[in-house]
Length: 178
Image (cartoon, rainbow, N blue to C red; front, side, top):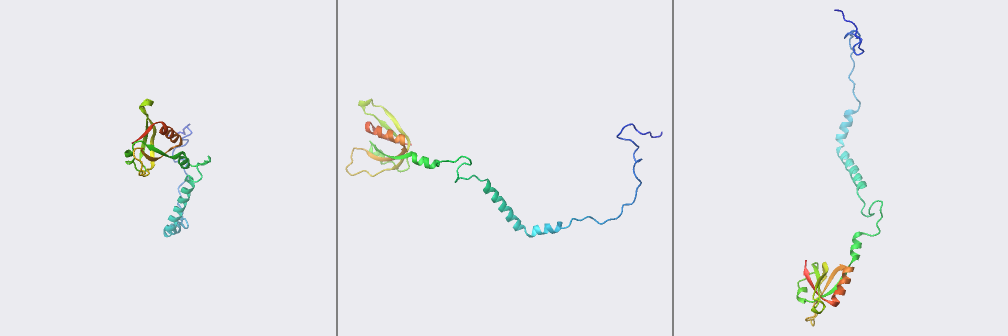
């Protein structure tokens, strides 16, 4: 059965019909890239320098990408530091506590709640005036101070200091350790 050409464009002729006749391939020298080995050897020889350069580039990239704390936030200038604002917001308030023996238990750095206890004539109620106030100083009691209570210096916000002064004029103050 003779082979007829196919009407399909994929196989227009029988296999091998359009191939050129075979010929001998000429001999040629292998292709070599110049300097390939030399660059590799040089890199191995100067590996310390290459590592040092890599470290320098990495350090420079980290410094450039790090946030800048001295300038504040990028794009939003800050007028004052948060820590400075907190320091300015607290004041030292000397407070006379009714029970002098309780004050002897306190040390600088302790946290206390200050409670105002009104006398029976004023209704006898008690309320917390300051929560978590830090004890700054516990002055030594003078020799002649017997039953007048004891002084303690507390570090509190300004608004709390005003309430402490107001409460100390009308009520007896007590402290509880936090």
